Image 1 (tube, rainbow, N blue to C red):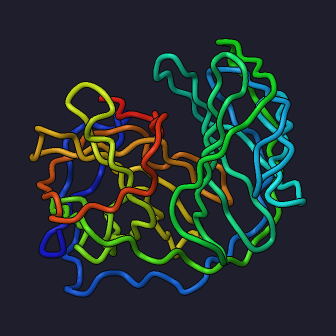
Image 2 (image 1 turned 90 degrees about the vertical axis):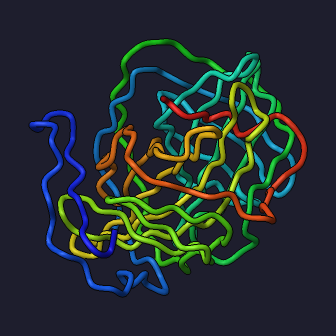
Length: 285
């Protein structure tokens, strides 16, 4: 991609990618810290979700109503919201962020139909890398009702994630090197991308997949974008981008899309956990 980036054109546009200016040979720089301003705005989802209960150490009370609330990390309740849902039978999953002044967590709540598991990963901040899975208990309340929630999150100053090495991805709009650093073209601009966690789901169902949980840094707009890069087993000419959300603007600047790219499996794969259930937020192909 660094030789000639192509613009990712959203479905609302004409549909044909346009050539972008040549990118420099070096990857765009990823900052050592993420300085994110407060988030305050409305987020609209196709569902309504609430959860009340608790999760095992190092977490605590979970209180979500109307897609917003708190998730405790240690004894501290962090401001949280839910922005995505998925079904991986027999579980219904809900994906969200929890924020304090020095950390950014991506969490995944599992309902069956009661609250049964919490998966959490530190996107940015000081702490252990990789996915943490704990038992949870409580109630889940969900309905397929479009919901607009007022989301208010604090500013944070968080240490950028350490790159998670392994996979390589090469395409006209995305490049990821084996050290976990890369770039993604949005709007004709090459933005720095960093893989911070790798999920091995090659035997999670169907053909299977791998997930490269990543952060994209948009310096011009001073925002950080969480996105999952899916590598679909048996499809080495395309990858999928999904479940994106940016802070502080609370937008989804990527959507769900298939983009051309080749990828290869490393000899040694990093598997952040070895017990079911899988992360479950499978590709939306």
